[in-house]
Amino acid sequence: KCLTGIYMPNVTIGANVTGIEKYGLYKAGIQTLQFDPLCNIEELPDYAFAENKIKQLTLPTGVKKIGAAFVENPLTSITLHEGIEEINGTFQDTKISSIELPSTLKKILGNAFENCTGISKINIGKNVEEISDTAFIGTNITGFYVDEENQHYFDEAGILYDKNGVLVAYPSGNTAEVYYISDRVTLIPGHLL
Image 1 (cartoon, rainbow, N blue to C red):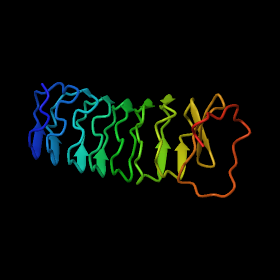
Image 2: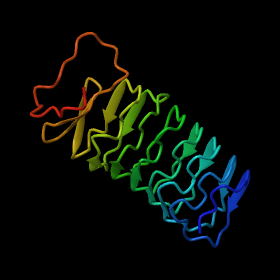
Image 3: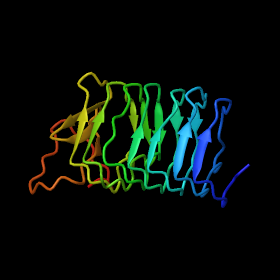
Image 4: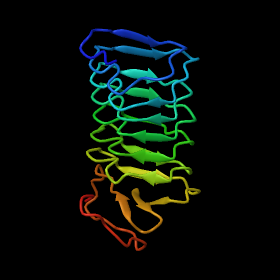
């Protein structure tokens, strides 16, 4: 059941909770959200905590997949544990200014960081195998940095490319007057520059 429209400023998710449905705590007035360390939630779906007032958050260790669960929260700080494999629209319209992505992350999908204007750089780990071409729209990122062991992506001069030669994301916060696109590029999608 959806608890939209009620006022719950301080919420603790208990140890026996194994799931939260889409829109579960949408617009619930939450300011402080905590998860019991024994909580065994594997997925945080779209809008589960959207449009609240959550500023800081530590996710439970069992979470593997996060949808657009925190859209339009003034979230400035979040701790992501190892084990998270997919983010999809997760930080859209938040106030995140820096983030460390776990090494277990495989997919950065949807508009994962859309309008996160406080983030200046993103480190892409060695296990990331899929990145949406809309993941970083509206950011002020000045550079992407890809682990050298990543088999699917690379960076050159802070620009993100896939190994097939497709430009994936240009750092929109880059203020250089001269732009160099790698000789390894074979395709520049229409909406990236």
